[in-house]
Length: 324
Image 1 (cartoon, rainbow, N blue to C red):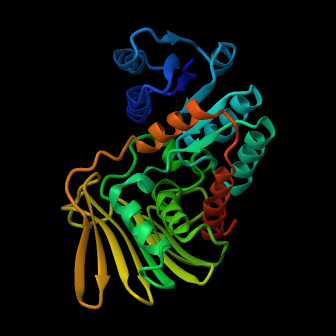
Image 2 (tube, one colour; image 1 turned 135 degrees about the vertical axis):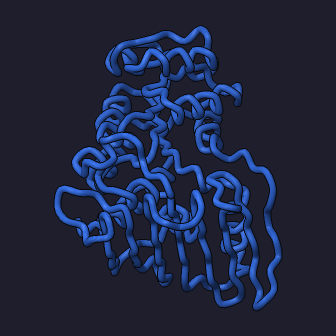
Image 3 (tube, rainbow, N blue to C red; image 1 turned 90 degrees about the horizontal axis):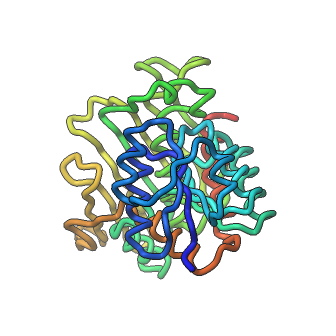
């Protein structure tokens, strides 16, 4: 029997992840909860027999095996813990928590319940980053001593809660930087981070209490590797987005970057001296792969996967950047 899944939050991202999971054939979408009738109607086009419930409590009372959470960030940790304590597996949008303490609490709940925990860290699943990670892990690039990471989004979020640090946990770092930090740590094998330094700005001025950053420049050490990152909302970057991850080793380098300002199209290259070898190019439907992978893993086993312990590493780096 396929695992039965409830979907908490069915805005654009929630519906996209629902479609990716349903398309695997590994799970059944059986329940949905969202305050917007329009979002529920859109979700019903993906799973026409889906049951509408009013609250997470109502959803957890059903005969379901897992919950997919795509709600505002302030709710992620508490909702994940509630679902896990009810014996349900969880797949949550990033960030899993606003702070490392919140993330640690979710991981502890998943471990105690022995239930699968996933987070939508989707850039790991791009063909380009998978190719680069393969080069690094097989030793082709030698020892990685430096990583440069960039994510500039020319538009910024359109929902008010993103700009309230209590609700969001921060600005562009927790929104975009979490992907960059995860890519670096995932590729390097999740070494412990230290020695973080950061400059955070809002509207071109140093960040002050009660606001969130729209530009950040930070560095930290991950094992023996120096990692630098910059991210922003609404930067005058000349295009819709600038997304890049460059890895430099003693025997070579590699670069992952978006094409022509796209949020979706990427290339990956292997560098040797002045030579460049293209690793991946062209269309790559990667956006729902993290969700699909979780659904397929859940169909195999509901039990806790120790790989979820690594979610704490990225959260610790974000706390270091924010000085928490």
